[in-house]
Image 1 (cartoon, one colour):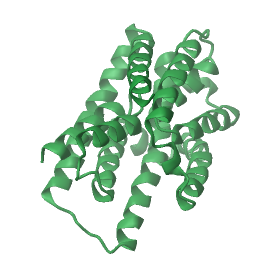
Image 2 (tube, helix red, strand yellow):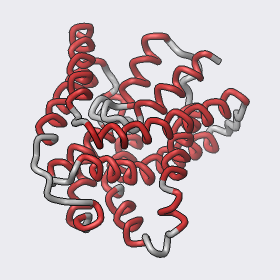
Image 3 (tube, one colour):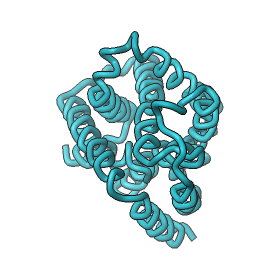
Length: 251
């Protein structure tokens, strides 16, 4: 049970912060040699985060007809990462990135990229400037999130800041773009379970969904309030310190 609780909390806290949830889950699972880090739990953790973001943006979903163009843009932006992610998994290439050196370097390098883009001047807003050209650019940035340590949240926020969106709207764009990606991850995991004839739905897995949902939701609320007052430098410092420790260990 302790393993499920720890992994659920880590998923919930790190999924929407620009610090890479995949890197943290890989590092913690390897360090503690967790046995419950399987496909079923992975589906539950992603499902919890997905439910949290849908619940947070429930008004947008309830007004789907009014916001249908927004959702079309969100889906379009996630096409590149879903297609490339599918081929990486299909040809067993994804595991080549799941090592300490890659995680360490990507954590540091894209931490600095987050710092640089956060200094860009604010000229655009989600309401006025989230057009199809912007969607394509951020969608291409998001592909880099397939590398553990890059952070899907971090690279999409960086991409939006690079395109001169304000911090708050950059975070909202990142949140919205997580919906198709988390959905695809959950569906792929379910497909793997069906393929392997594994339907291991236990109370521990339900606990994983609940805790992932809970911590994801409060992390979203925290980040929204945080970015109203502060910049992203604290996340950059955390990434550089963490990445440096990983690289020292790796080499």
